[in-house]
Image (cartoon, one colour):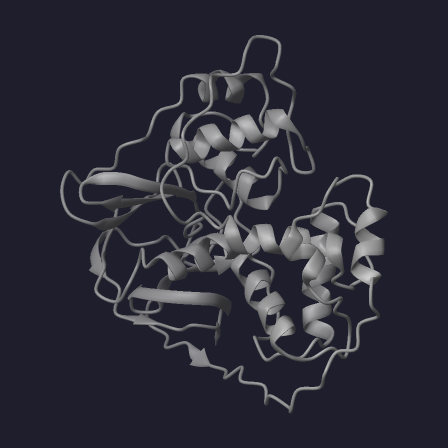
Length: 323
């Protein structure tokens, strides 16, 4: 893995001339009024045009960018609502228990806008009061509600990254729970049960090994990435490193190359990789289990990788310490 040079595959679809979208007047308002589960839609969501296969223009580009920011991969931000964009919309709708029709209407836009605004930027939110006894339901992917939001707020306030405090137990919340479990030596299943809740109640911000400066640390034993900024842990992210026969080498490195798209190599596709040791990179993946499973690279979720790029956590030259 550390000897190959990944082959670049340009993903630069030609942008055709934009066509005006014809949206029937009042459609968004009628649909919004009929949505029972979400209550009142945000004004921004209600004002977006309904997008479907064949739609084109700046609204499609906005949708495509926000889908990528939320970890929903497609072929690129080209302003054309094609099969790849529809597939990403369908995946989002399934994850958030929406009507799965591949059409981005008001209800889907409401979720898409949360992806764009709740991607982990800004200051750490204030932690809520600890959950009271008897308020610890078993939570897993698909769970929703105030208990999920309490869990999310507590994790983010203590440096465990996920994409936002929206009360929906999605992929990034499960990844954050798994990171907590790894740091505290629990079963690595991404499910918040009694043992995980007991840790959440007394959760603190974990410390890296770096006491000063800014470093990306990779803890191979715990299978987490720790982003230390000015000597303090900023974020902890779940990762999966090299499996048996492909162990990720320990040492101190620097990020020397990055590819801002899917990068294809002999051992597979790497989403937005940042290379720090030959062909070994930190990159996005749709599969980050609780154990080492890669060919030597540092896997994080696609959403986490998008945040790393957007927040400037790992620029060219950033120090990397693998131990």
